[in-house]
Length: 340
Image (cartoon, rainbow, N blue to C red):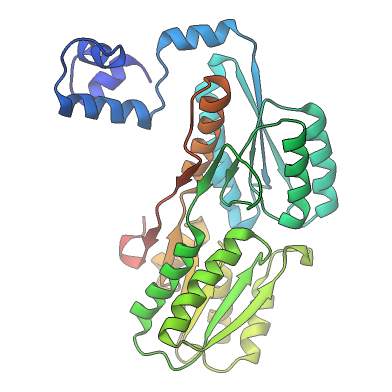
């Protein structure tokens, strides 16, 4: 992003942008706000700051996330955002490494955590899934003064520079409201497929949904699947669960695997398809939503989260700027009619 590009986006002259950047001269309030919004959106760094960074020592950031193919490619979308931001700041002497781990292999994570602590990067971007395993790692980072930013979820009792993600409780409550709008009267039970039940954001989603369900008297069945079961939940796992149940009015799946529930429902060939609501607009969810096999998806913009998280590290550690302790991602709702 250059001053010229900012001027083109704002529809003003380069001189007007220069006056806003250097806080000199008169600029209409509306024009100033428009230019400042573009500067904030694209994280523009004035040349004098960039030059100063190049003269200083290089910085090393590390992004530690689950494998990009896990959770149906959700983490791949987050990593894409990180890699985009890494490309934007590389010329300023910022080196960013992305390390992926198998979230179903706690022992493997421990070995990777040891190597990250030994390397001691200037900053860490981390998704605090598997809290029983990852909390000790974050405590070590705190002890040896590695600052960190959380993406996707929070971990209460820790001190990140910033947490970037949705409000999971509100996300669960919204799933309840969406289900109610689709279902109207609810007689048969609603199944909650609680995948990764140890994760803080998953627990809070369930709590949000259950609060709405209790308020409106929905009968609930909960099926849990642990991170420590050795693998992701499968279509066969969900099909076995559905086989044991009678009629269901709906299925809420608390992570990105709604497409597996849709496939299992299709195989069961229910006379009346239960309403299906899940999270994350990964390709398979998008396809089945478009085809009418999923009713609603709540998206949490993983690519935007990845970019914002790395830029928060950059602004806090490299530029010494204060960053917001929480960056809340909007609750985007997709149904068949507005699916991209």
